Image 1 (cartoon, rainbow, N blue to C red):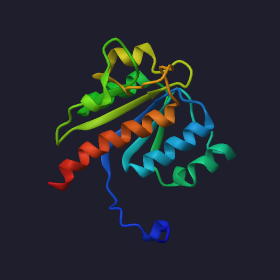
Image 2 (cartoon, one colour):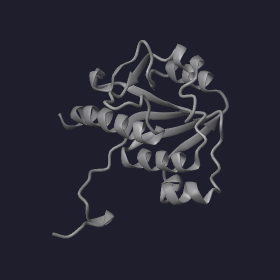
Image 3 (cartoon, rainbow, N blue to C red):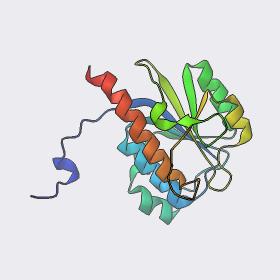
Length: 173
């Protein structure tokens, strides 16, 4: 058994209609990880809102492993206005946040033609209240330990895995 290189894998390149909107995420290692996840899960675009990423950061570059050069991204000042504009374009917004109205990620229902905005919040404060108010739905990841939160990049990795797994079923039919 040999470990395969990137060029030897048989993964089929797919782009999913998912925009990852980052609501004031500032940690350079997290931003690098999120670029890498965006590439790995074939999402359409990353939108940084509120806090512009420092693309000169060596920590971001090391963590991203060059994916910041290939992933489509942009910066917008205002998360709420950006989400409202995307709603007008037919996107459904999903915030990853534990709220009184959030549902478990595994209970999310998707349809074939759906375009999604997956929203992640600041490392310390989570998704802002203003953003939560306009989101179509809040999702949480069921956890079984004492802590009620996890690293933002880990939670987005789990969410993208579950969402693209469901969306990929539509592409294979």
